[in-house]
Amino acid sequence: MEEDNNQSTAVKQNPLMIAVVAGVLILGGIGFLLTRSGSGRPASEPAVEGVSEEVALAQEVRDISLEAGSFFFAPSEIRVKTGEKIRITLTAKDLMHDFNIDALGIKIPVTKSGESGVVEFTADTPGEFEYYCSVGQHRANGQVGKLIVE
Image 1 (tube, rainbow, N blue to C red):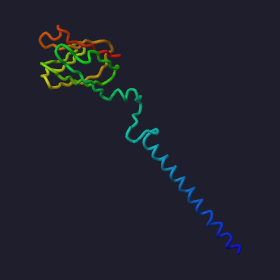
Image 2: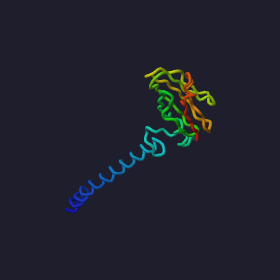
Image 3: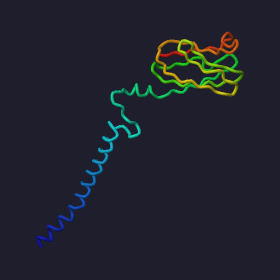
């Protein structure tokens, strides 16, 4: 009878032990996944040793759409941060237009109405820079803008 009592106690404790072991395995698995992906980051965001997140973000390309029309650019002012990688897409709304920043050596060739041109660069020089259209008298008629690198 004493032996039957010991067996019934072991049977009653068995589900509790299974639950404890399952919990430990689950927590261990979560811990393993977090340490594999690097500092608790999701696996899709690899950690880059020795590079701050600010610098890592600066490696991403910032897209800026620029419209060119009869003697205007929209927007007429573009603000970026020093170190940002920039992609400007110029879309000619009418006539033909180009895009120039002489001080930085940046240029989008003449683009016909309805078409687009693209330039990529890294904004590594702080300051204010005029951009303009060099087609005909467009610049003289006010087709200018300002790039501000902060």
